[in-house]
Length: 414
Image (tube, rainbow, N blue to C red; front, side, top):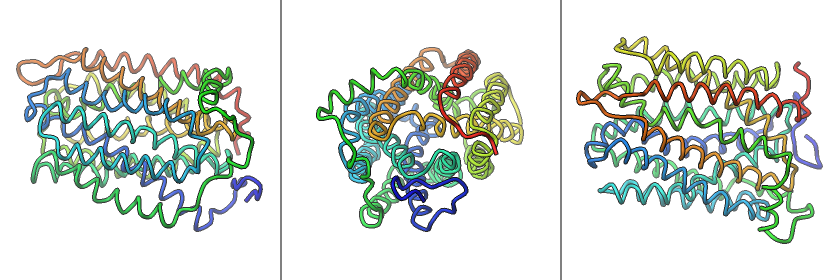
């Protein structure tokens, strides 16, 4: 380990504490992603129960993103002025409160308000997680670290979504939110008592005004391309995922009872993909891995959004390949862009990135809600239009990522 920065040198073996930190960060991502993702499979239950239209459901999803975006911008100026562990605990406590409000919501307006509260706090956590990972791990091994952290996405499918759907089917759609609280509170206590402070950046010269710190971060020319990419990358998730279960039930012709199986098998497969993608991005190059993931994503989105009635095995296979493509974009992109900001601006850079990502995601979800229409038989109309938009944005992001790759001193592939 580099004793001056705490970063791990290439090929270093992670210590027990470093593995603990990775596990903690991955679990935080698990709970945050699960809270967002659980809305999608519950959509088929929530829409009729709360008498929502597709547009209202799209707004319920995007409200989280918009509030998270506003919160990220407000927090960015202060993100490098405190111990990152303390920031993490503060926002995680607020996230738990927002999730509790979701569990107690009985009307659409209450659900909308609860999602806004959850977004205000939950939307900042991801940026703090990335700042901690960037502070503690060198670029040469950061692909592996990001791979393990992002495995939380798959774990939320393997463990969270099937369990959440089981609870929802056994009781009602409120139950999964209570389950998230039950696992989030112990995780917060683990961070409080066992995680060490992450405050090495405080020993460096800081800008005196948090507002100038934010302004300088926003105005830094080197960050602009990364910020644009940050807004483009989540388009597919926010456009397609909220309506995924409704599409499976209404268009593909499968029943609600098959959803846990789809998410479970897809998650089990992709749990192993995250670490492998992370290792591949460190070994063969982060941009090369991103190229592979983008091409695969475009192909699978075209297949998925134009699918008609299909058997369960076909739906599972398409989902697995689609998520492999998504992971192969997400992990190397995060690792590559994490090398852009200097130490004293990492918190602000990640907070602004998270804010822009959430705003872009909110716009994407709102556009999806406006494009999608509901046929009399319950099928979704124009879902393939969303696929065309997602494929176009993915192709543009591939071009822009090339210029980020040229600007980052990435070590040559091993």
